[in-house]
Amino acid sequence: MSYLRYVRVIGTMHVSPKSREEVIRTILEERPHAVAVELDRTRFIAMGQEREMTFEDALRFGRRGLINYVLAKVEEKLGEEFGMKPGEEMKAAISTARALGVPLYLIDEDINVILGKIAAAPAREKLLMALEALAVFLPIKPGEGMPDPMSEYRTMMMGFKRRYPYLYRVLVEERNEVMVRNLISIVDNLKLQGIKRPRVVAVVGLGHKQGIEHILDRAEERVATSRYFYI
Image 1 (tube, one colour):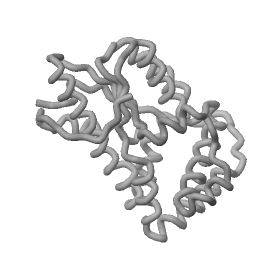
Image 2 (cartoon, one colour):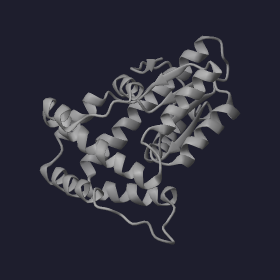
Image 3 (cartoon, one colour):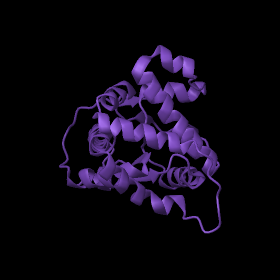
Image 4 (tube, one colour):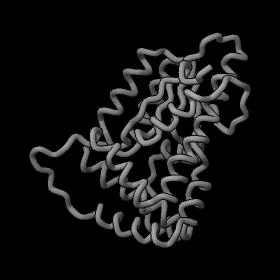
């Protein structure tokens, strides 16, 4: 039996106001037994503190800190372009789940593991990533007829996969596997609590949606182990 019948996956753009609205609307409509978000404990705590990492902070953490700093600045720049701070859709999922009294789960891979994998990327991919990250900081003047960012996202992801095969594997495919294992475990544990047909809403980046749904649809129902965190 497919686990997809138990899980509603919302694919969001982390810098899109439309995604925040969709998250709130879906959770209110579904009234799920659990809400799962693409966060780990470290990022969840950092989001609550709302303290931005400075360049000096990044230097203290070495290479991993610098990588995290650059990625954060890239998202920040994109947020300015689209009128929304990164992570607002995750905050919306958290606050809506709490307002409804719905259990919240953190299902993503540990950020330190992710940063370690990024640091081990081939030199070619790291150089290309650095050059593209610098380009993001250049001023972009919005013009008429600009494509809707949500409609262009899949094209962007395919381009990323072609340019960065290693990073795509560790940032998308491997994390898909981690999040699916955790979602399966959440469903199984809800069944053990006597809920015959659990409903779980999972809020993940749009680039993860199709892959997660594909794996869930082909997973046989079973009792699974996981490393998700219940909040």
